[in-house]
Length: 138
Length: 374
Image 1: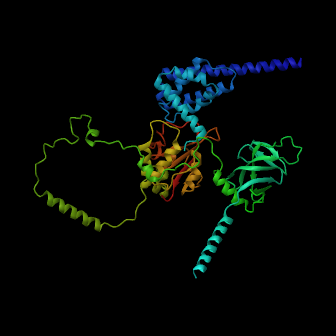
Image 2 (image 1 turned 45 degrees about the horizontal axis):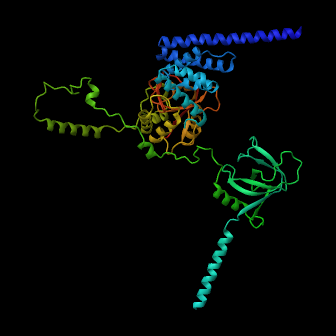
Image 3 (image 1 turned 180 degrees about the vertical axis):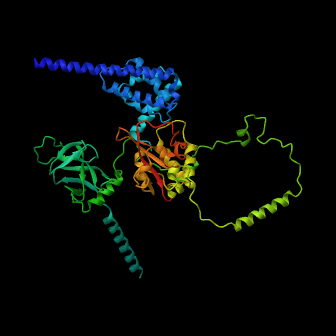
C-alpha cells in the first residue's frame, strides 16, 4: 500500500513537472513569434524580455524532459538574430551556445531556415561566443 | 726564453680547456628513485590532477628521456623510461619499458641522478637546467597555443587604427551637392578701407587687456553631471587629454557589432590614448580590475568616497573603465567598456558601441576604474 502510494505520488510529480515545461515552451513560442511578427526588435525593452525568454527556454530544453519542436527551434533562431538589432552585444549568441552543444543538428536545421545573411550572422555570433568561452576576450 | 713562453702558453691553454670542461654541465643519463614517487602521464604535478599512472617504488631505476623546468615553482619534471622496478607489492607499479614523468625538487629530491659514467651528478640543478633547455624549457604548451605571444607596442596600436572617416566640410553641411557651404554675400562691399589698420588696433587692445586681467588660479574643469561637481579629482580625470584620446581611439576603431573581444579593444584604446604605458596582459576582462589597479587606477566601487554614488553604469563619470562579471557563470571572462560621456548622455565603447538604452544582459558591474593622477 505504502509503495503504491509512493509510486503514484512520484508519477504525479513528474507529470506536473512535464506539464510545466510544456507550458513554458508553449508560452515562449508565442512571445518569440510576436517579437518577430510585430517587429518589436527595435525596442530595447522588448528585446530584454525576449532575451530572458530565450534564456529560460534554453534552460528548459536542456534540463527538461520535453523535446523542443522544429517549429520552436526555428522561432528561437529567428528571434535570436532579430535581437541583434537592439542589442549590439549579441547576448542571444551566448544564450544559444548550450543548446548548440546539446543538439547541434536541431539548431543547425533551424538556422538553415533563416535568410542567408541572418543565418551567417547567427553562426558567427555562436562561433564568437564559443571562442570567448574557451579563450577569453583579451 | 722562447721555450719558456711556449711552455707558459701551452700550460695556460691546458688550464683553460680543463676548467671549461669542468664547468660543462654533467650529462644526465640515469636516475635512481630513493623514495616512492608518483609517475604521471603529463607535466601536471598538482595534487588534484588526475594523471597518476604508477607508483614508482623506491629502488627503481630508469633512463632520463626528457626534462622540463616548471616555471611556476622552479622545480623539474623528468621523463624516465623504467629500466628496473624496485621491490613493491603495489598493483599500479610500472613495468620495465614504461615511460612516465616524475617530480624533482632540490629541497626534497627523492631521486639520485647519475651521469653517463654511472657517477652521481654533483650539481643536479645545472644538469637538469642544461637538459631542460635542450629539450625545451618550461611546460609544453597545447597545440595551437603560443606561449610567448607578441604584445602590441604603442606605435603598433597607433599604426593599426582604422582610417578616420574623411569629411568634406562643405558636403557635410549641405545636402545639395550643387551648393557650397558658404553662400554668396550680396551685401558685402568688395573692399573696406582701413580694415587692416582696424584689425591691428583690435589686436593691440586685446593684448593690453589680457596683460591687465588678474591671473586666476586654474579652476576645476566644469562637470555637467551634478553628482560629481564636488570631486575635482574626478573632473580632472574626465577632462584629461588622455581620456579624450582613449575615447576617440575606441570610437574610431569599434566594430558595428560585438566580436566578443571587448578586452582586446579596450586595451588598445587605453594604450593608444596614453592612459596606460603598456599593453595590459590577460585574456579575461574581469581581471582588468587588478591589472588597472597595478597601473595607478582606483576602483570607485570600493572607494568610500564614491561607492554610494554609483548604483548603475550611467552614474559612472566620463572616461571611467567599467568592468563586469557574468551574472551566473563564475569562470566567464566578463565584459569591459569605456564610458564616453557623462550620465545618460554617455554610451559605452569596447569592440562595439552601445548607448545607455541598450543594457547588457546578465552582467554585474564590479569595477568603475579611474586614474586619480592621469
